[in-house]
Image (cartoon, rainbow, N blue to C red; front, side, top):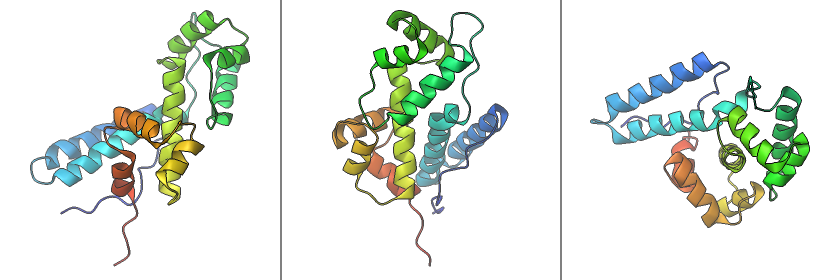
Length: 179
């Protein structure tokens, strides 16, 4: 059986690198699916992680018409990043950009390609993945530190987004013990 990777893949710095990495991982998964399901599962998990963290590398470009402008994008990203451990209301995000709630929600979706709360959840999950790789803290603690109500809430969102439970993901990405 193919050994599982010790670490999550390096986050590519460009969209082209991201596309090539994800295509390579999906190709590996397709090739190994029949002979080694664990290797296929590992490749798929890495591809999902890359896709989940992709927008973290760079801020989206301001939309040509109707989206957020550069300073608003930077402020909302900074606001979300500093408040991930607490409840984040869309009203508070809108206040950071000095827009009405409805205008902000529409402009945010045009700019980021997803609704504000979906973005917040994605950022929380990316932080949780980083914490699971960097520590052996209990999942309940990680869930709380990332702003989820409890471990069940965390697991539900994690499974919905990444296709596996946090415990399975952690085992899949755990460092291999030295032989």
